[in-house]
Image 1 (cartoon, helix red, strand yellow):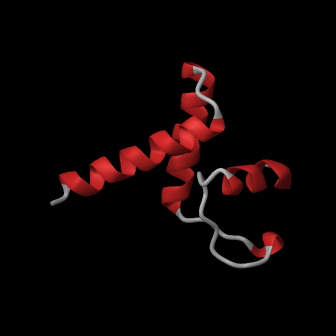
Image 2 (cartoon, one colour):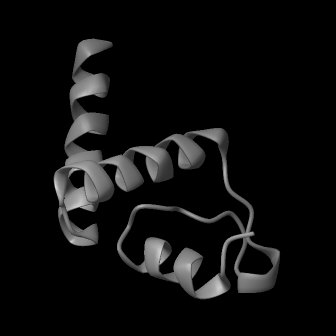
Image 3 (cartoon, one colour):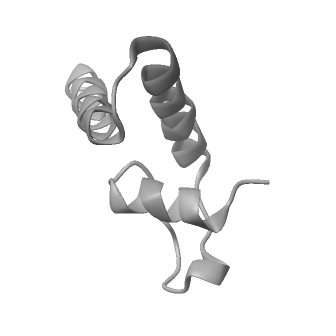
Amino acid sequence: MVKTETITLLVDEGILDPIGDNVERWRFSVGSLRRVKTAVHLQRDLGVNLAGAALALDLLDRIAELERL
């Protein structure tokens, strides 16, 4: 189980985008799970901090969006 504080931190950094307006009722998409896994990889294996991971994830999302064009 993941602590509420950890989830809140990931939301605050922009890594997760919750569905719902109440912390106790937040839900997350499958895409959010992928983002968390990538963020953990960036932190653990590459030493990137959360803010850097959030930026990298946004850039990866943008690249994927451009590749679909």
